[in-house]
Each structure stands twice: as structure tokens, then as C-alpha cells.
Length: 449
Image 1 (cartoon, rainbow, N blue to C red):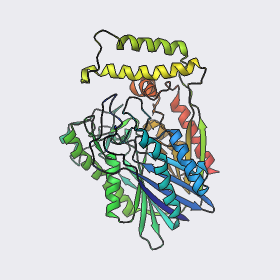
Image 2 (cartoon, rainbow, N blue to C red):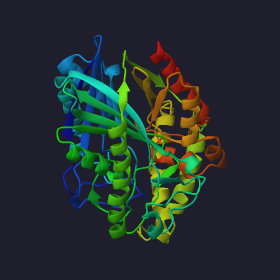
Image 3 (cartoon, rainbow, N blue to C red):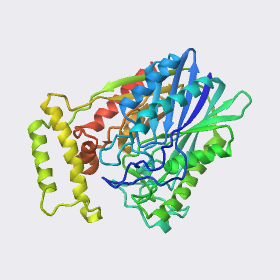
Image 4 (cartoon, rainbow, N blue to C red):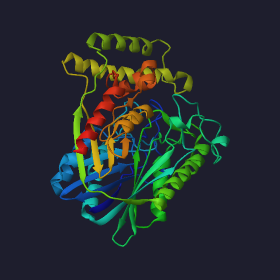
């Protein structure tokens, strides 16, 4: 078994728009609180090489993933289906062109991002050396709550107490999974942590660049273990918020360090307790998938666009950024998306764009990824039916395609089920809960050989 790590700074220049929290907020960054990184893990066994990259980003597009793969293949010959790119979904990083209206993407940054990611991969491949894996599962509580089924974030004074727990912890992740890598001399070379929680600990008024609690915690652990590289893999976070989200800026930045420390403590326990993990084979599997959408044709799109424009073109309409006028900005997001989709429909194009499902197998551990913000119930269905003893269901992988709402959230409709697809310029999904579970389990079966 040969294992390697790579690390590339992907921090944008100060001034670029940050992504998240709402439409047209003009969240221009004013300083770098913590650097953003693309961290890569390369593994080679019996002639099969695979690489996973973890990025402190809100997400990447499928086109960015494809470009990074081309650059890596040109330099090393690594097949495209051997490279997986995961994102943490930080809302304190640059807009990458994934969410319309949620920050203006910076063209030079987005154009050069695939090359920066590729450099991390090349470093990892050049770092390949004999190594061994370890595995642990450590309690990780007091981080998140299920925003769809549990409650809104409690007062800050309550959640900053180490004893705080959500009312329904069973609807969140309560265990952190940790994979360690040690060299021939037994020294820690790197680690991978996996946990599912929307990473956001700040608010719409914060304008500092950082990787949210997971990025801050990973950097902290790297400094404690000089020479090591740490990757964070985002799990099912579509319906789980951090317990401190949407607080004022000063309070949010304080809470950021508290929640990062809680997560670092969990990973630290995993690093200490990891037992040897025998990896007898490495495998990857990629599948292009088109998930069914609501059957909105040109007539339906035109009708919805007319309703938006009627609202936007009122004599008393204005772009006041007050919270009470947020609906104007939201309607503008929908209008922009509907205009693009209507033009495509009138050209006869299919509005259901493909995305990618990808899996990576390291012996008894399977990492199953999609571009969705996956909800806990979907992850639980996959884990129950998966074949291996350790199954990680990752979101924001290789693409960014919005929420994968579970049955209950989809039936209820609203922001996650109906609005976010439009923000991403696509149609709402039909039955994505079952469709995504099936696609991930097909990948799991393929990885099992």
C-alpha cells in the first residue's frame, strides 16, 4: 500500500464575493481569517491508483471537476474516473458560479481553480510512499441540530455550553469517523475525518474568508501534528445546521472557534484511538445520472416568469436591501433562472442536466459521493443497505446540484425542494430520495466487485 498527501492554497484575493446566506447580499470579503485549502489523498494498491480531494469551498461545478481531471491526466496519466473532488460547503469562501444570485463568481478565480486543485493532486501522487491506515469512530455531539424536524438555533449562551445537546440528536450525526495514515516509522502523515453538518457558523453580515468550523478544526489539528495533512469529507448536511448559525458577526466569530474546537476534540479522539484497518484493494466507480425533474415545459416556465416580472415591475418596486424587502431579490433570482431555462426550452434542449455519482473503495470502507446536499434519512437508507462495514455518504462531490430532500421534505415543498433547484438554474426533482438511494447503492455494488 502506497499513500500520499498534497496541499494547495486556494484562498481567493480579498474583495471577491462570498457565497451563501441569501440573494444579492454583496458580501465582498474584507480579510482572510483562515486560508482555504485543497487537500488531496492519493492511494495506490496493486497498480490501481485513486485520489480524493477535499476543498474548503461551497462547491464546484461538474465542468470544474472535468477540467481538473484533464490537467491531472495530462501530467500523470491518471484516468478521470480515479479522481474525486469533495467540498465542505463553506459559506465563507468564494462564489464559484454554482448558486445564481448567491454571490458573483470571480472570473479569474474560477478559471484558475481547477489548476489549483490539480496541483494538490499532483503533490499527492508525487508523495506516494509505503503507509498503513487506521480507523476509529468517536462521539461527536453538540455540533448540529436538524432544522427540518428539530428546532431553530437556541440562544447562543445555551449552545456554547459543552453540555448542550439538540432535542432530537438521533436526527443528526453524533459520531465522527476518522481515517489515519501512518508511515513506515509509525509517524502520523495525515488523516481524513467524516461528519455530516451544514458547516455554517456565521451569518449574512460576516465578510471574513475562512473554511467554517470544519476548516478551522482541520487546520488546528494539522498544526498540532506537524507535517500531517488533514481532509474533511462532508456527509449528509442537507437538513442539519450548526447550532450557532445566523448570529451577529462578533458572536458568530466567537462561536466559530468554539464549535471548531468541539469538532477537533472528536477528531483528536479518533486519531488517538484508531485501530489498524486492512485495505486489500482500491477501487473507484463513476456513473453519469439524470435525475427526473418536474415536467415544466416552455408554457409553464413562461407563466412563472410572467408572474415574477409582474412583481418586479411594480411602480413601487425597488432594490432596498432591508430584510423586509428580501422577496424582491428572491424574485430576481427566479426571474434570471427562468429566463435561462425558457431560452433552453425554446431551443428544444433537455432541462434535466446530468450529474455524477462516484464511489471510492478502500478495503472495508466505501465513500459514496454525489453533488447533492443530502438529507439524513437518505444517508441512513444507504448505510442500512450498503454491503461494506464502513459506508460514508458524501455530499457536494464532483458537482453542485442542490438539495436531495427526503420524502417528508419533498412532500412539504418549499425552499429545499422547490426553490433551490431554481437558484441553481434547474427544475425541481421528482422522487430524488429513492432515485439517489438507488444510484448510490448501484455504485456500492460496483465497488464490491
